[in-house]
Length: 105
Image: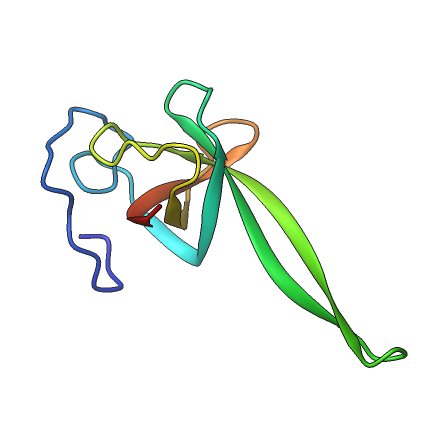
């Protein structure tokens, strides 16, 4: 199905853009992040945090990136949830990822 040992959600949905119950295939990169906004229809904004090393000062700084991801009804991630997103074909101008797993709040 999706790969990476991810179990399909228990709920069923009729969304064609769902990697479990529709025809959307996933490939490429996978990230874990926190949902910071779920106000758009079937879309969430996921924020990824990483540490970047500054060699001159021998310190690390925190950097963030935001991605828009499709949110299938069977997963229904809300703001504050920790999720795993995977790359898929481009779904809109700014959306090229889909939520495949909810990891917790």
